[in-house]
Image 1 (cartoon, rainbow, N blue to C red):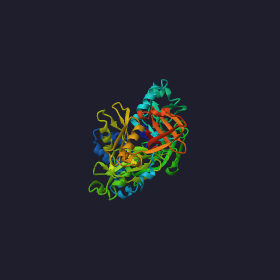
Image 2 (image 1 turned 90 degrees about the vertical axis):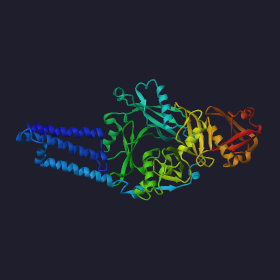
Image 3 (image 1 turned 120 degrees about the vertical axis):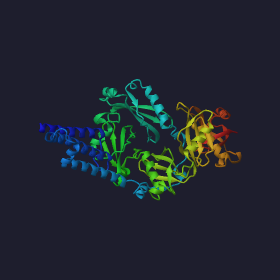
Image 4 (image 1 turned 45 degrees about the vertical axis):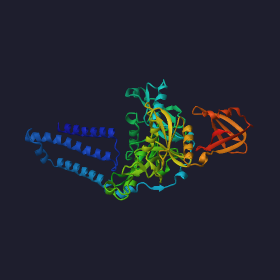
Length: 545
């Protein structure tokens, strides 16, 4: 009977630990909080089981009325077990405190290296045809709408809320895998895997359901060993993976999971950054690991935006120590309460404003942080915080009740400019707005991005910022038409015209009724324009002469 009880006790302990490990999948690493929790859990379970075993023996010798206090006092092993638990718990608490910014402020402040840079040099004027027009919520609406039209899959799958923003073949897109609609749908479909993912062009709003020859077998919606987190844990038992892993596609459209590996540089649990990244093929489950500096260029996200914001806040608030960041707050800067993404040089950069911790409504500048390399650039540009710019844009359409999305930072005619969409109560984009960062009362609204940009450039000219329309004068051009091509942009017909002996391309927007006379012209005809140069490099025709 005694041997049977020991065997059952040992089996119960082993089963408890296996279940706990399989469910929580902690890294076997002293820097992992989960590892310490698992260790303390194992010691606690072992103590309880041994105490139960001892209580049976003690009851036989001293009667069933023996008190627990007497039992504990009679067992050295129980005392030792409790002591070991308390010691490890004390080490865990001490490690947490000694790893915190309270005693390591200077080390935390140096986790991020920030370079001062020039806005107009780094951020070139871009064509509005490549501007990402959708935020995540709008992308979800388009993705769900597309999924609803896929009659062969809609009853079995849903679209994940991932919607990772990446650059795909020099185009800003959001991608999201499908997920099983329920555990029952997983049971009936898991043998073939998830058949597709959603890809949304952020500039054109074109939404595709990309079907795969072989299904995605490793994802967050899988159960048991094909769950991506469990798959990674069994392949890399000592790696501490970030809570956020990113769904991306390579240049061939193959789906991957980009899995950042945490690195702790201060004490046991402090100074978290990313040291490596594991790329897991979502179809085959094959994994490759890279040092951060060696990650392939098609990967866009290694550092999460939340981690980068936290690292910059350490840099901005801990210059004079931890207690100054709480009490005096001298020279303390922090990020504003939101962020967006900018595509530069085929990388995705996180953008956010930088303001003082006093909570005023102005920025001292803004910061761009590369999500693949953690390269950080600060730009000293004073202006309104994003919330103020959003309120200013909403004020222009307050009668319609539209709400502004968190802005994107653009270079329009050399001016740092907030660009945002204005959405109705159903979440549909109705208009676009551009707001000058330094003069946030300067707001331009348009039904299309082109109209918005045109109104904004004209606004800058009116206020003497650009030379094209100072004193009410536009630039002029005259010549013989060398080529004339009609194109349709966002539902509006434009004529692109080139003149002989000129390298300029003139954009005639027929939505302006005063310009419809251009349809009477043909190649070889003489024509003269008044125009202004738009930020996309084209010459926007203002009037025909």
